[in-house]
Length: 266
Ligand code: IPD
Ligand code: CA
Image 1: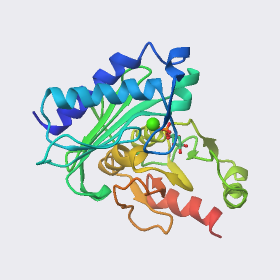
Image 2 (image 1 turned 180 degrees about the vertical axis):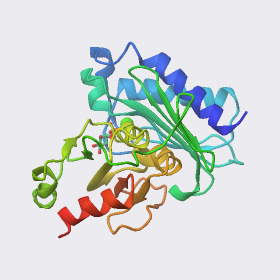
Image 3 (image 1 turned 90 degrees about the vertical axis):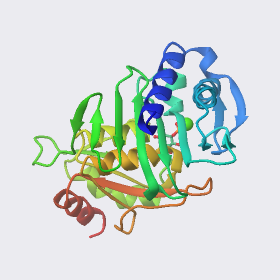
């Protein structure tokens, strides 16, 4: 079975197991702090267990790097890493705000740039975004590309959750300059919408995003033709470590990148 099929099947199983749980009291059950540093909620635990059980069922030889469960070695002879954020947008999922997803990626080495497969599933409706290296990005069965012409409405995604006053001051010109600003609260799904051409640029300069929140989106954005850069505008890469936090800019093309960056780096 191809790795991408394994990730897709694992994501489908998460969807089946959590679709009636979101927004219920049961979803919120507190399991203490997970490996990623946030409180693990029952819905996070149910979703992670779904993936771990499935990988064990099919004897997939890998190391899992889960946001809640931490590093789980499923083999002495691993083929690579499964980078798992079983629920991205946990706060939305617990409150019942219909914007949360799962993010599963496979990497052969300890680097974002070694990711070969990624799947992001919208857990509200089961819609799936997926990519394998050099094979393009897909939304369900349809090939997707970033938006590459002048948009009617320029949609600028910015993650401002927990942003410092200094960062908000730096970003202020973007808010002022008649851009249509959006922030939905599930990083991976926002990257997927960007890859599908529904946003022109998506920015997170908070230095807070974990590897698990970005891994699948990394490949889906790149395979959809997007530019994916770090805060210094170099190609994004990072170690798959629990201490890693990144900032990034996903831009549909150089023109929108230059336009937005000239507003915040005048
Ligand atoms: C969070 C979401 C959110 C982002 C946070 C992440 P989680 O992931 O992606 O959009 O602002 O930084 O921690 O905790 O729901 O998996
Ligand atoms: Ca999570």
